[in-house]
Figure 1 (cartoon, one colour):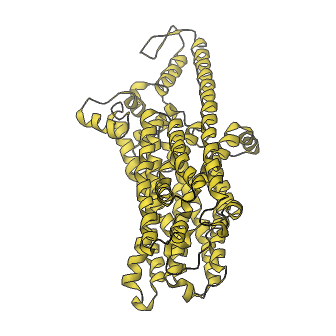
Figure 2 (tube, rainbow, N blue to C red):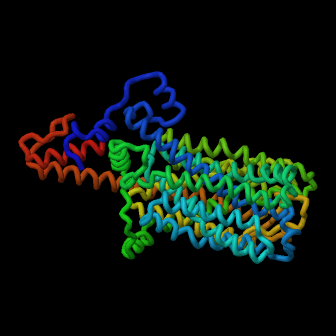
Figure 3 (cartoon, rainbow, N blue to C red):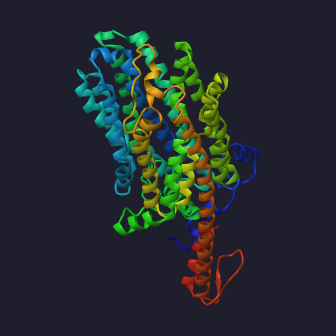
Length: 536
């Protein structure tokens, strides 16, 4: 670490606010609340990160959800007949995908502690692009089993690793809305996949002797390959080891200083057994992970919207349009939650309030079985209580002192959720004319108990369970807030003690505002300059 503040361009520039201006104030209002306090150099750095990092992850997340949803679209667009899929063969395809996806979550997040994420994610994206192409050439359902296995193997890394990388670069006032932007690419991809398949089937079915569903996989593969190449060349890895061509040496130093100021520790690349034991003994694992599982269970009602519409004799068109509209409605709310949480500088309220609001729609489904209008309205607004991105942002901040723990817990939440809810995956309802109806998730052990197909559409076990889980999740958010506040007090006390010991051991006093030690040793002066600069 360079000691002289006058010679450390990256660090001293970060400490100086930029000149006043209407544009800075406007951007501070609609974007980062500390935009005005940032230096010109720091604004340039964040802008570059947004253009590079967010573009890579948003595009990759969009393609992940498009590719993930394509099986259901292909199944009802001719694949079932072409591959002679009968019985539970379709279910096994999705089961294989979800099982592999579940198993690979934690290993993927641990792998990027040793391997550059740009290499790892680029290889994964190109891998799933290759097997997306391969699905276009499948001749039987056995080949699809193998292709779905490898698509899951390569896709598993993207979501949890992407959240982990974002938490390694952005500060508290920046992170929430960035994760929200990446997260909303998911429902956008789900909606886009259906529209794309409809267009392909209408205009390309039979072109060059290929069925429309095969063209779907070919086109998706073509779109996915550039994303993999973009990850390799543009994804910046981590602040301490980035080789991104668009970042100067001063900007790399500035990025490291921002992480230090934010309290985000650098990647060590080591996950020893004692550290895993410490993680498993911490309150972080035993409260954050169950909280996420109850929250995830508390939002599962939306999966059964099309089942209800079909049972209520809604037209095929409305069975497509209403769920798609609910996805569109979900997007602005999700981004608003991330934006507000950055603005107010806290995640607790933006986790708790949407869940409290969610008590209404989940309660309607649980206790008003005969109210059609209320039920449809409740399904429509279910997406407005999604707080996954805010929760993951909070987790990143709670665990920022240990990147290994951050990676492990982000992956653990996804792993246990998939084990609970997606290990058996999509069981299609045999109505070939209804594409979205094949996306009902009667999956894993919990839905097979509480969301039995024979109990639909009222699901007298499932909806009350979702309602109760949502209430329990609200309680968990309060518990997390209390524990996090205690952790912050402990960290502040430890920091004060370190500063007092550091200054006291230098044999001199600190002049206010100068960062210098009077009547002390030269080495003491260096230490105070660095500490005061990084903690400013």
